[in-house]
Amino acid sequence: MKLSCIVNGNPVDADVPPRTLLSDFLRHELRLTGTNVGCEMGVCGACTVSVDGEPARSCLMFAVQADGCSVRTVESLATDGKLSRLQQTFSDHHALQCGYCTPGILMTLDTLMQKNALPSDEKSVREAISGNICRCTGYQNIVDAVMALSK
Ligand code: FES
Ligand code: FES
Picture (tube, rainbow, N blue to C red):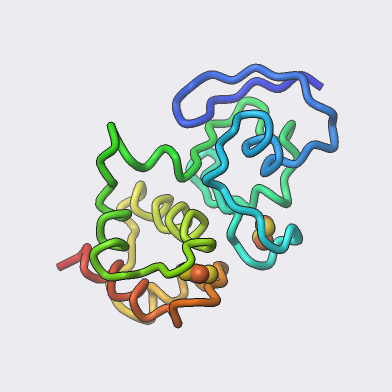
């Protein structure tokens, strides 16, 4: 099936088997391997990308469902090698260890940031990332990193 969309600001036209997952399309066809795949069943959030400004689990979407959409992946966050504010605060607060969950968490939070809706209190930050599983950090440093942005 034909697919036309915008990925990280660039127009993409492709012809894909209808069952191709968006996560596989991004990783294997476009070589945007920053998007990680964990559970492949919508539970872990590692594959989260932005689709038309909303967080979406790319393992639960067919690539053709992104036809006509604007998709952003974690690769869109840094500019000319300079980390975004969100990425920098994660680095500053040691908000990652293995980093497997990090692209998904960053994209979940970035969609909120784009709407000026990034939470600034601990409970709300925890709620915001409740769909993203991190097996390493215990979440506290992630919460601290996000809250630091509002100070
Ligand atoms: S890989 Fe998509 S939610 Fe886990
Ligand atoms: S940093 Fe390892 S899973 Fe989150």
